[in-house]
Each structure stands twice: as C-alpha cells, then as structure tokens.
Length: 334
Ligand code: CP3
Figure 1 (tube, rainbow, N blue to C red):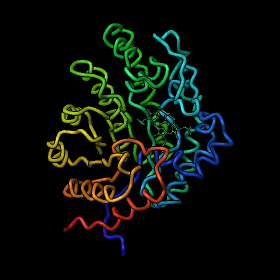
Figure 2: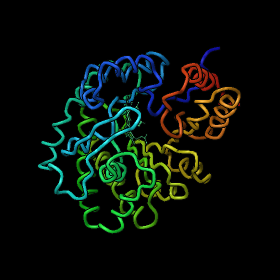
Figure 3: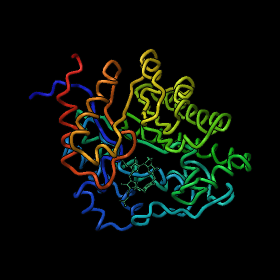
Figure 4: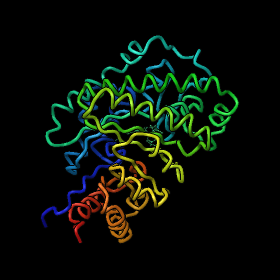
C-alpha cells in the first residue's frame, strides 16, 4: 500500500544500542564521549536509523552530558551502568572561564551537524541539549540515581548555589544551541527528563524559567528554528509549562492531562509522542493496538509520532519496522 499518512515519525534514542550497526561501531570505540566528539563517526551513527527505516528526522548523535564535560567536570560512561560524573556541590569546582572557551571544548559537535546538514536532503535535522535542571541533576548526583536525594536537597537547602549553577547551565545551553542553529539544525529539542522531580516554586524557578529563557533567546536568534520541549514527568503541570514556555512542539510522556490536547491545538503547538517504549519492546497485537490508539488520539492535532521516552536497548528491529508500517499506512481522515 502507498503511504497515505503524512504524520512524521522519529524516535528518541533512535541511534543506539538496539541497532547492530551501532553496536559494531561502539565495540571499537570504548570511550563513549570520544565517539560523541568524532564528527565522522557521530554523523555516520546519526544516519544509521534513517538509512534503515527512512525516518523523517535525523537527531544528532551526542549526549546531554557533553555540557558538564565542557564545564570541566569528569564525565565517563560505564557499560551497563550509565554515566559517571565526579559530583560537584558548587560552581567553584568547575573550570568555568567564559562561555566560548568552554563550548570550544565540544566544537567538534558543530562539525558533526555541518556534515549532517550537507547530507540531510528532505529530512529535518534535530540538535539538542538537556534542560538545565536535568543536567544539574547528573552533575550533583554524580550519575544515575534512584531517589534523587542529593539534587532534591540541593535545590531546597542550597538555593543560592543552585540558582548560580542553573544560571550558568542556562547560559551555556543557549550559546551551545545557537551554535547548533549556525551549523544547520532545523529543530532543537530540550530534554528536561527530570522535570517531574520538582513542584510549585521549585518547578517555576528551575524548570519553567530556564526553559522559557532558552526558548526566547533562540527565537530571537533565529526566526526559522523550531523548538521541541520535553518536560518529562510534569503531569498536571504540563499545562502550566505550555502556558509559560514558548514551544513549537511539546513532547508528551504517558501521564499528561487530557486538556493539553485542546490547549495546544489553540496555540498551534504540535504534539510529539507518545507510545510507551515498553509496548514497542514487547511487540505483538498490543503494539498494533497501541500505535493506532496514539494515532487516533492526536489525529486532530499537528502530530509527530514518537515514543514517551527513549527506545530501549533490547527492542527488536522487526517491532520498529511494524510500528513504522502502521504509522505510514494510517488514514487520519477516517
Ligand atoms: O536520541 C538519539 O538517538 C540521539 C542521541 C542521544 C543520546 N542520549 C545517546 C546515548 C540523546 C538525545 C541522549 C539524551 C540523553 N542522555 C538524556 C535525555 C533523554 C532521556 O533519556 O531522558 C539523558 C538523561 C542522557 C544521559 C545518559 N546518557 C544516560 C542516563 C545514559 C546511560 C543510560 C542509557 O540510557 O543508555 C547515557 C548513555 C547514552 N546516550 C547512550 C546513547 C546511545 C548509550 C551509550 C552506550 O552506547 O553505551
């Protein structure tokens, strides 16, 4: 059957360990950060899911933790363990000089984007960074955390230091994203993966305000750039977020309030999401049903098909192929 559906599609973490062609390159490059800073290999990895699945968006292959690295923190990635950072508790522990000098440590990433820009044809190119609070979370916790005790204490007990660090992270993120625009990014996604940890004034101060500043500065910088926000876990505060933060696209997880669907339509914000990556992992009939459910739910909106979080490493290729086929064949006029 011809493709009838125009809903564009991509996956968070579309370049990664579920792809054998990624694992082959990764096996020969033990230091993940070096891979992120190698323009030829990063560009090649970014294009792997496009070559395999003909997705509509290319996302830069890199990581949100290149920013702590650029700020002088030790960052490494241990197999089956996730990232490891030597935790900090104040700005003094960073080698923070001036924005340009710090960003220049990761300027290879702009070269990756330029390569991708020259090869993107009709695909859209996505650059990204972590939301300031999410990046701070890893800097303070020193890596993946179960209870997030250190970061929660830090924002409530060490407010002044938290504000200082968030300010630097916001500034460096803005500068970093501007350089991504210069290098050919069409879209920018801000991964605020740990937004759900905060409530009330802390949500306002550490999630809304920094994300708003990033959006405003980037929109001032370029009238073409499109911004995707992903304040994961915001639950009932998703509405507050879109009322206060400029978004072209809002990326939804599984637990958003239903009124969002109408609210974003009025504001002409597109919806990105939101199939559960576990459903994709498990496959079968449930996968078919849930993909259709997502398509039906957002068929009156401007919709970019995606997951509610990153694709899981054990996901089978045939399940990904099946999902894409259902999306491409869906008739949203029915
Ligand atoms: O989406 C893409 O394909 C682009 C590349 C990308 C990666 N990480 C590659 C990666 C993107 C956009 C990210 C974002 C990222 N990184 C986030 C935000 C999204 C989210 O998942 O909430 C976060 C929190 C990180 C930090 C990070 N990087 C963690 C916690 C881990 C380890 C756990 C895991 O999921 O793998 C990483 C490592 C990482 N980043 C890998 C990849 C392909 C795996 C590294 C490997 O090959 O061993």
